[in-house]
Length: 114
Image (cartoon, rainbow, N blue to C red):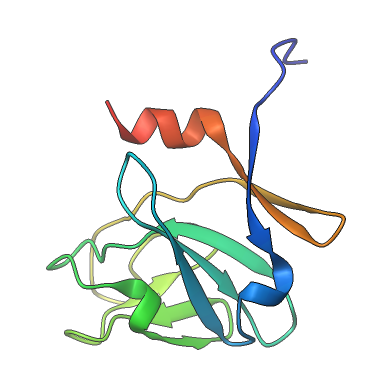
């Protein structure tokens, strides 16, 4: 059991994230995209496709994936991994929903700075 308490950063209301869409949150580690799927699940990824750095937040959300607007790579919202024949990964940021607010894991954001 992890005895260290995690830090959770409030980045906005769940209502700020459109259904089947994304909202961008600026962080010292770069932009983070918060996604909401059609079934209301939330995911957070670095807003940068592993292929050519396209803004994933501007892509089309479908199922548990997002299609990059630049070259149509499909990235898993659950893992950050490219799907199909494409290879690459963008960092996933743990999040939780509490009292209608989206909270990001501060430690995970700090690791992106390294």
